[in-house]
Image (cartoon, rainbow, N blue to C red; front, side):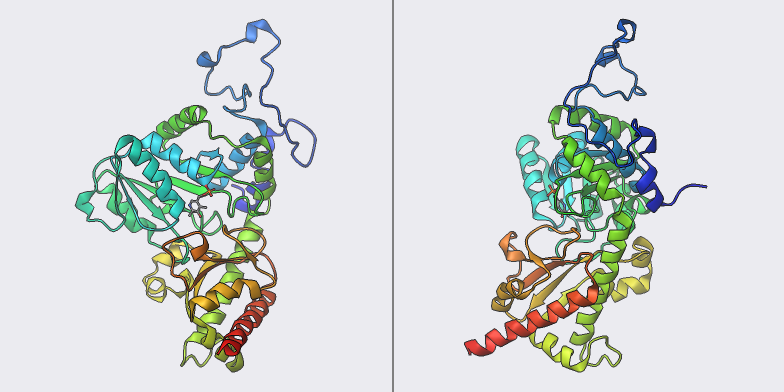
Length: 400
Ligand SMILES: *Cc1c(COP(=O)(O)O)cnc(C)c1O
């Protein structure tokens, strides 16, 4: 019987355990002794792929290797780690050298990395929704889903079919939909990218990027090139990563469930004629006075009716959503009124976070706040949001 993902998260690295420690030890060594038997000295260039002994930590080290073993079982494809999500994207672009990359707005940092590569080799950026004929063999279709900052989901299979019909490669940035919530390979992704800094790390204490692919040729090349790019994670991050994987399913499923409950609560208040809304009348009045809109995959009713969204995210939607306040001023003030949400950039931690998005994204709507739900009790988060809405409304009254 194959083990379930939440069991693999604890045991996929068992065979790499060389000690009898229950908690994995941390190995900070940057270099490792060659065998003491002279007959066993095989130069690096002649090593077989099966030889997994560690030589130098830019190539591999015990902690990141254990982390990668767990990632490989949960992402369902051989997985490599990098210093950050952006260095993982750089690894992909160096490996594939596409002539064009088809991409939507999404996470702004990726566009910075793309600009660097374009400056080096002239790679052209074209819109995600370009005409199918505009794509050529070897081009990359880069699909981020769910999308930053709205939490809206896009149809992976649709983009896989579009890319593959032209010989292009579908790379899915699945940062907002970690394992447990979606498996992009099942819907046609060729390569999956994660900023492991977010849900995989999950504790706001490590930077990490992950690339997974079932294409053996690309995987071997990515690994070889990572050695020269030098963007390998440190041992401490590898160790933190394994610690994080143990609870990935618990965290992510709870965060998804709580986020969806909060989104439904806010949305039912905004729906004027909703007779069985989850907001009470009094709550509804406060929410309606402060909030102009909320976006999240759970509100994509047309896509849910079509069925693909449920098939792509069968266990729940991403734990990130966005809200737009009635004014820029209210959006500016809301984070300071919240007691249980950290006002910061990033997402995916066990602690709930909110970001007035204009702080880090120059193109963001100045009324927009991105919300990342943590593992706190959802009703406590709901009460906190409600009192914060009341507080910003009170400030508006005083100002008038
Ligand atoms: C954060 C993020 C990245 C970049 O990851 P880093 O680990 O910060 O380099 C890429 N894509 C998405 C969707 C992200 O949220």
